[in-house]
Image (tube, rainbow, N blue to C red):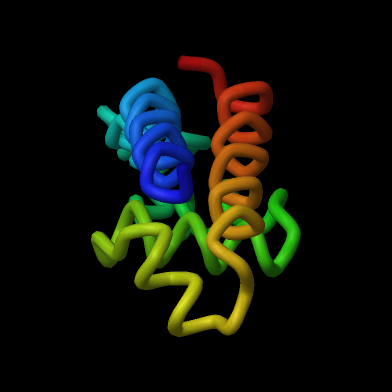
Length: 104
């Protein structure tokens, strides 16, 4: 009887693991990021700094580490000490703010 319960529990857990969505989140790169906030002759670095100044410090750090330095959310979480979900939230909110302010 005990072995049967163990077998059913194992089958149930395998089913749940097979249907549970994977926790892998892929972000699209910011294509054509050079046009964000482009103004006359100040240079791309000033334009990017101006665009990033609209974000909170946590969002800015997460965006810079993810987009410009290529770190994954897991790596950013380890470096900053924030939970992975918080890092993903900061990246998502930061991207949304940039899109609202500067368009596609």
